[in-house]
Length: 79
Image 1 (cartoon, one colour):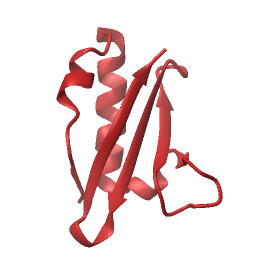
Image 2: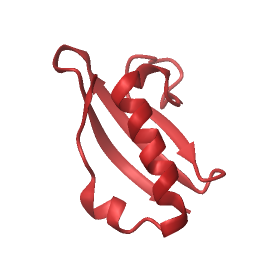
Image 3: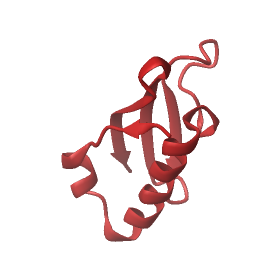
Image 4: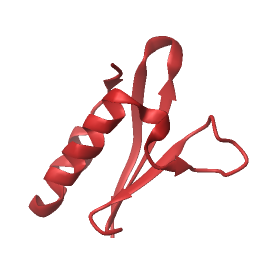
């Protein structure tokens, strides 16, 4: 399993109806983060990744540090 670093301030501002979907994304990140979302930059598949949820209303940018089995959350945006 991977450890997912929190983004407490941003998560606290998520609308209530997106919290369950965010939790599902985090569970998937704990298991297999390279299968979640898509590369942020298509030409760099091992770099940052982005996943959208909430019918495209929210986007989470994250990176993976394989040696440490850690996922770091960079940005969470709700449109």
